[in-house]
Structure formats: structure tokens, C-alpha cells
Amino acid sequence: MSVSCDGLPQDRYTRLKALMERLRTDCPWDRTQTFETIAPYTIEEAYEVKDAIDQSDMAALKLELGDLLFQVLFHARIASEAGAFDLDDVADALVEKMVRRHPHVFGDTEKADWEEMKAAERTGGTLDGVALALPALMRAQKLQKRAAKVGFDWPDGDGAFDKIVEEAAELRDAAPQDRHEEAGDLLFSVVNLVRKLGLNAEAALRDANAKFTRRFDAAEARAGGSLDGLSLDAMEGHWQAVKRDET
Image (cartoon, rainbow, N blue to C red; front, top):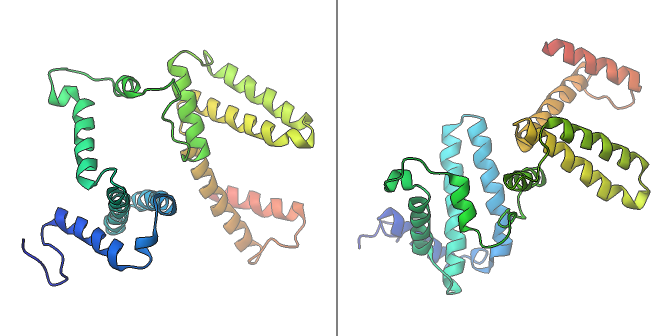
């Protein structure tokens, strides 16, 4: 096996595995990590990939995909050390699953229903497999979509909208100790209406966050750098002026 000047094999796949082995052996920080300590970084790297895509920054995307790949290597190495599986097993399982879920590509079936095949692979109930670690809005929409697959759904958007009105009233009238639960019910209902409209709740709120940030920054700029100390009427005046400037 040929080796480069850094002591790692030259073959890319072997080089990746050797890199991870070396880090787990010789780096004080890397060798103390566990699935649990690494998981937050895995999620963070996935979001950084999304940011690079949103910015159409191909140079950044290349680097962020590498960072995300490193997370896969890390988890696979920890699993290998525990005797559970290794990176080869991960690659094999991926190929087998994709071939199985694409009979229209690798078999003689003309069309495949991705959701039906995923459902057939689940061993639990309808909601089994919706990851707990997903962002709350995203998980709510996935749970609702799964439930709708078996008919647990409003027939149209009117029912979903009426549910929002009902939940808002319950939150308004709730005792202090019940507000947490009622607020969750209201948010869940809003996500359900968004889903019924064919929209993505996570993306909609992310865009709303970006819009609020843009407008708030512009309102502060109009006010000389800060809204602090202004009356609500003055703040609203700057806010409305920013909105008019955007039209």
C-alpha cells in the first residue's frame, strides 16, 4: 500500500479510515469523544451544509460536506471500537437500502412508491421512526404527514384553521400552569395548517426569521443605530417605513 508524506495511505477511502484511526489514537480530544458528545456537531454540520447551499457558495459547500463526512467517519469509528459495525458496514447498508428502494432503477418495476417502501421497513406503529432529534417544527409536520397517511387528517384546510382559533382561545384562557401545554397545542395546530396548504413549516419560519432580522436591522439603522428608548409609536413608524421601502 502506497503511503503519502503525512503517513496516511494514498487511496482516498483507506486514507479516510486511517485518518480517523490516527485521530482516535493520538488526539487527546478525539479519543475521548462518544456518540453523545459528537451528535450535536453532526447536527450543526448538516445545518452548515444547508447554509452553504442557500448562499450558492460552492467553495464553502465543498468544505462543509467534508465536515459532514467527517462526522460519519467519527460515528462509524466509535461503533467499530465497540464492535457494533464499521464504515464498510455503513457503506454496504446504504447501497443495499438504496437498491431496495429503487426497484424502478435496479429491477423490473416501472414505478416505486418511496413512502410505501419506507413504511414496509418500519417495525413499529405509524409514527415509528420519526426522529426525536429533529427540529420541533419539522418533526411536527412529519408526524402529521404520517398520521394523514392512515386517514387521521382534516378533509380540508378549513378544519385545520378552525383548530388554530380554538387552540388560541384555550391558550388565552389557560391558567399559568397550563400555558406551556396550550402553547404547544397552538404551535402544533399552526404547523398542521401549513402542511395542509402544501408548505414547509420549518422553511416558512426560517424565512420569517430572516425577514424579521432584515427589517429590524433596517429599522434600527433608520433610528440612528438603536430602537432602545423610543416609544412604541416611534418604533412602529420606523418599522412601517422599512416595510414601505421593501415594496
